[in-house]
Amino acid sequence: MADGTGFQPGILDRAAPFYVAGHRGLVGSAIWRRLESAGFTDLSGRTSSELDLKDRAAVFDYFAETTPRYVVLAAAKVGGILANDTYPVDFLTENLQIQINVLDAAREHGVERLLFLGSSCIYPKFAEQPISEDALLTGHLEPTNDAYAIAKIAGIMHIQAVRRQYGLPWISAMPTNLYGPGDNFSAEGSHVLPALIRRYDDAARQGLDTVTNWGTGSPRREFLHVDDMAAACLHLLEHYDGPQQVNVGTGSDLTIRELAGLVAEAVGYTGAIEWDTSKPDGTPQKLLDVSKLTAAGWTAQISLADGIRDTVSWYRGNQAALRG
Image 1: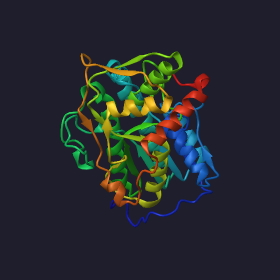
Image 2: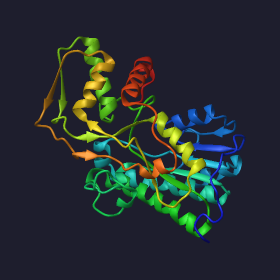
Image 3: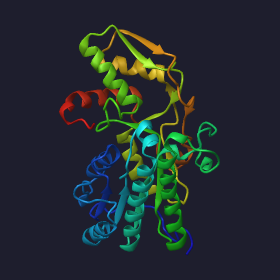
Image 4: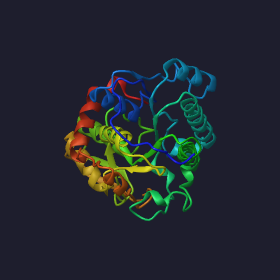
């Protein structure tokens, strides 16, 4: 069957059953909030204790029971560099199991529109900047998280295969670095932005004179507020149809040094900022080319400064419920 035969994107039925897999995570919870605010009235989701997505029979039973018309697959086993590097088998097998079970069940039960969410780590470590969608499978992956990346690449291929074989208008989106309410602020497992928020907020509360960060502060990174990501997901579901994954980001980046300055300002830290240059910097730059997303009619709305202030406010108000 031809790819996406005869389908034209359009406004989704707000009353139709809509399943958000991973609805308690950073991205999934933001998508749930976005769908609620957009008027969707039949949302469903299950925690991992209620539905183990690695259990194929249970997943098929859930789809038979709820018969969703739309699905966003935001569920995944995720972790930082250390976890990915230490447990590559877990990240590969568990994510493949989740994806295959959900995608097969969705196909079996006639899901009309499905959005698979990946990660910018699918692209080669030394991809040309900014990274276009065409860079996929053109070079070697970052070794510390290659197993997770391969699982996500398999998901993209699965979406494309379903389009070719069954003609279903399913799509994939690849976000840049995400942050916002519900993020992981743990000392061991957090990514750079929540880690900086925690570090500088602690320093401000304790009245510390100095905060020391790893590296030179020169690497450039791109950050997207998770509420913008959620808005982009709904926009793509209603306005985009194609086999190629779509990068989701802001199209601009900044240095880690500049990022640290924004965080310090947001939390009210006024002490010195030092850099331990004996520690590694990592990849010099990681910026997504978002021209395909822009052509589909969407651009990010939340500035980084505003987004950081929003995230700091959430962090301070949810200390008791923080993940990790």
